[in-house]
Length: 456
Image (cartoon, rainbow, N blue to C red):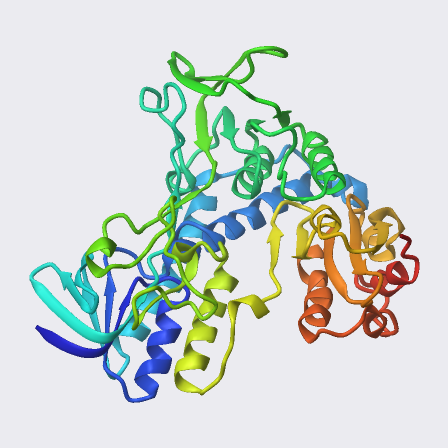
C-alpha cells in the first residue's frame, strides 16, 4: 500500500489547482484520473462549445454584413470539418497543458485508472492500493439519459458525441430547452441546420423569470428555430430519415422527424462506480455527494468538489470549491459555500448574464422589492453595434437596499453582469453602484440609470 498525504480523484477544474496548493505546502499527493485531464469544461463543455459558438457567430455576422454597409459576393459556406478542427485544437492545447503541469509537479504522483474506495481512506486503482488521511473527490458529471419511450431503440447524441460531428445535420432536434440545448440550437442553426427544440415545461429555461424566458424564445425563433413547449409525450423511434420524436399528444404536430437528435435534459454525477458505500460517504437520491458548508462529506477527511456535490454546475463554482477547501485547510480561514453569490451565463447570442435571485424567487421570500428594467433598444452601445435584442433587470430589497439579483440579456451581458456580482459579494447597498461613473459607450453605463428608475 502506497501512503500519501492526500489523494485527489478527478482532474476537473478543482483538482489540479488543489494539487498545486497541497504540494506547495509540502504534502505528497496521489492524483488519479481515469480518462481526460481537464474534466467536462475543457473536453466537452465550455472550451469546445464556446469555440464553436465563436465560429457560428462569425457565420452569422457575415450573413448580416449588408446591415453594416459591407457588400459580400456569394453565399456563406460553413466548413464543419475546419470548425471542428479549430475546436479540437483549442481543447487539446488546454488538456495537454494540465497534463504537463500535473506530471511535472514536484510531490504529485499521477496515476491513470478507475479509483474505487476500499475503506474511508483507502483507494484502489487497478492493482495499486493508495492511502491518505485526506481524500478529495472531483469526478464531475455526465449527460443524463432520460427514461422515455424508445430511448434505447433510436440513435441519439449527447453533449459529448455532438462534438464529434464533422458535418452539419440536415435537421437537428434537441430534447431539452435549457442552457446546453439552447446553445447547441443557435449554434447549429447558424451553421445551416434546421433546428427544433422540444421542451417538456411550459417555457424555455423555466428557472428564469418569464420575461427573460420569453425574450430568449423570441431571439431564437427570429433566427428560424422551431420551439415546441408543453411537450408531454416525448418519445424516440427509428425512422428512415433518422429519428422520429414524439412531442405532444393533444395539440400541434404530434411528431417531428430529424436527421439527428440531441438529448440535453440534465446531468448525472459520476459517483456510481467509486465505492462510496464502502467508504461510508453519503449521497442523495440522485447520486450527488452530500457536503457541508465547507465541502466536507459525512466522513472525516473526505471532501467532494465540483459538479459531483450538486452545489454548483459550473467551472467557476468548481474552482471556488477548490478555493474554499484550500483556504480552510492551508490558510486558517473559515470560508463557506453559503457566502457564494451564484452567477452564471447562457451563451446564446446575445448572451444572458445572471447573478443571484430571480424576481420570482425573491418574491417568494416575502420581501418588499424594488424592480428595475431597461430594454437593450435604449442602450447606445447595443444600438451602435446593431445588436439591440434583450433587456436588463435588477431586483433589490426595498428595506436593506441591497441587490438580490440581476439579469442582463443582451450584447456584453456575460461581462457586464460582473458589476452586479461584485457589489452583491461586497454586501453594500445599491447606491454604491448607482452612483458609480461608468464609461460611455458601454452596456454597463445603463446600470446606474436603471437603478435610479426602480419601482415597487
